Image (tube, rainbow, N blue to C red; front, side, top):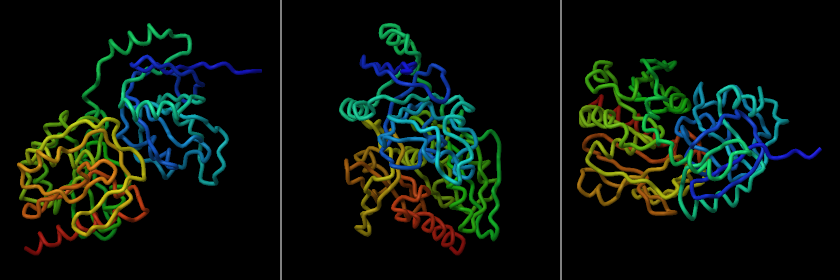
Length: 364
């Protein structure tokens, strides 16, 4: 028996795609973006930075190695949806504990397969990220466009994914104590710091600087997270008060927040950077890193000229800022994700740089 398409994508530019449902069958209005990774769909699914986004996977086969218990980046995934060419519901992997479909159903994450992902990705590349309605195949184009038109863009993503209270993750042989401001932090960041002898106290995104100082940290970390950095002025205000008092390291959204705290501006990219294959040049050493990225916004390089920050890294694909530093204040940040093991170890030195910075601060 031929199975008829039961789901549909309606883009705000009028494009329609019919496909087959997996995961949750809830109707969702989301921002459509693409990811160029060839593996790691579980980490993508569970990365809080994908909140409110429908991720189009450029790799054509998804689900074939299932879901492993130890590979989640958060306990409660908040991604909006997955859009794939082919979904496999019979995984072959000794580590697999359940299927991707069952996980997506449990967390209310929508999925659609059987669509022309190459065409969708080219459209996003050419015209930019846009909103999409994932709905039943019976919904008309006119009805879908009206739903898109009437849907508001949320600005509370960081609030929804950040922790609601203080949590501590102790290192076996503690050398340093770090306060991590959780804007949607991935688990592997904590693991990367713990493995280097850093106990990590995780605090909510809007924790005031005074409360952070009261925890007596050796350094402060500003995490990745979803959405527009302009939506979290409270975090930037806390960072601004802490500058010069403690070593500070930021990743992804944390990089943008640190830049804003110094007075720089950010802007939205045409289609963002998402995937594990972005070449970045370290301007100090001349070395090229293969990086893992996931963001829609970038720091404006011209606005940085009005701040004490210097540009340390540049994206070789489009020339965007990938890293900044103020050595006098013991502050630095990168736009990409060293904890995602790109390269696979090209960017691990950034955690060691943070350790060295805290060592020097203690001995000063």
